[in-house]
Length: 96
Image (cartoon, rainbow, N blue to C red; front, side):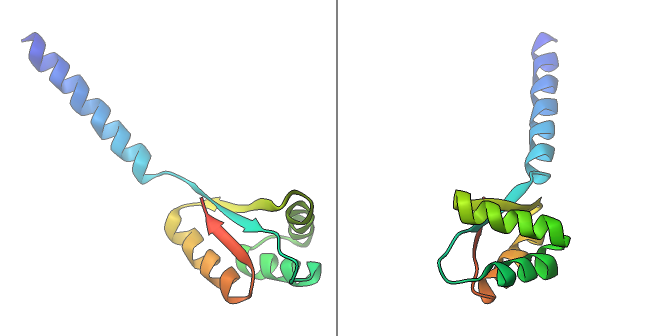
């Protein structure tokens, strides 16, 4: 009987782990470059990542001075579309 109790706990833990993995959040990180202007980066963050103007400006400055900035967090599928669109506009971004 004890073995059965431990097996149930193990199965319960495995189910919880699976749910956590399925709902994992990822970060969309924008990297600095020497090509794009602040105005272009801000415009892209507003139109693609749905930042307001202040948030986009702050993110652009963080990217410039720190070399990178997380510009969005979420599920992989949502971030993948944004990452592709940022890349299409000449910005360097990756999902981590």
